[in-house]
Length: 405
Ligand SMILES: *Cc1c(COP(=O)(O)O)cnc(C)c1O
Image 1 (cartoon, rainbow, N blue to C red):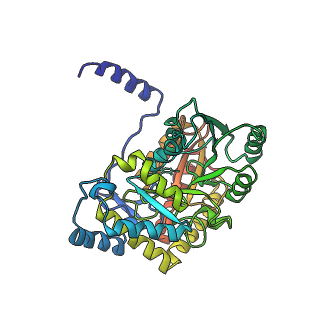
Image 2 (image 1 turned 90 degrees about the vertical axis):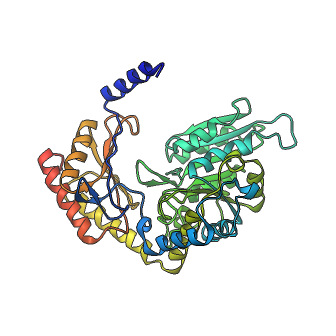
Image 3 (image 1 turned 135 degrees about the vertical axis):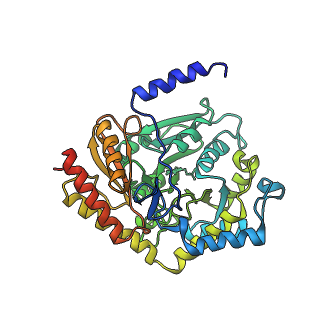
């Protein structure tokens, strides 16, 4: 094609910089074990935290959804894309996370892209206004892009150092007498490169003190964090105190796709009127809706699936550290195994795949230079045998590559 040479040049640069993303395809469902090139390997790279991607009850709900509600909606929500099950799912999510109402999107990426400009690009009764977003330095790309969609003339963006709430308070304090209309504090609930949690209780306190809207993206927390999987607000004892929660149906909750914004009745009603990805993009298919409802049913009926995830995580974290690997402390199922050099992470990921473990590396520019790592993700779908197999492989490969302490 015309101009392809410009793209090839860039592709060459990506190769040279060692940041080329490769895909390792498998031919089985997303589960504790998958088959790569005819060989079974233990899956330790997925967001399938609760094993729901291939759970019998979730699959059954999706199949029944096709029978009862058909395959596609062929419409956006407000034209003819709303079935009763869409409303049911929104109610289920609100009940689970403790908010008044919820609006579904085709992804959490879309939800985050929708939230910020819907609110901040609108005059809302006043011709002149200025808003400010205080955003954590490690926030997800979809929050960054959502903020980029806000007009720069009316939106100030202030970045605080990751999880550094003293820094955030400095910024808030400095703006105390500024005439902002909306002040928004935006943070991931879980930082996905680190497996660390935002201090959501302290964020609630700061939002109260400085009269800010607290926005938490709980994509890696819904179904994962908290005794019953209700997310970071449950874990920090601040259920119902976070103003706006976004999340995904594409990780722990079934793992297909879909996202949501949850909050006050008024905020969600406003989003239904204003959010462009809601107004101009298709409604979720019945399979996803029914399977997601089944996922919330499973979660509400029986806490043991979340408990199993937490037990698997504690076991893996303890054992991998005992082998002499350096991991980032914490208790989230995202376990970064720190290796330093990008080439070491790449080589180790390949060696582990040969030894029967599917795990991917992260390196610059995704994480800072010299902090390359393998990102292990633990799941309730993993048996003790799977985890032990992986630990043995880590030990053998780690010894060979001389990365153990
Ligand atoms: C995965 C993720 C998203 C995107 O979710 P999708 O539903 O896949 O679009 C957004 N924010 C955070 C923090 C995530 O981890």
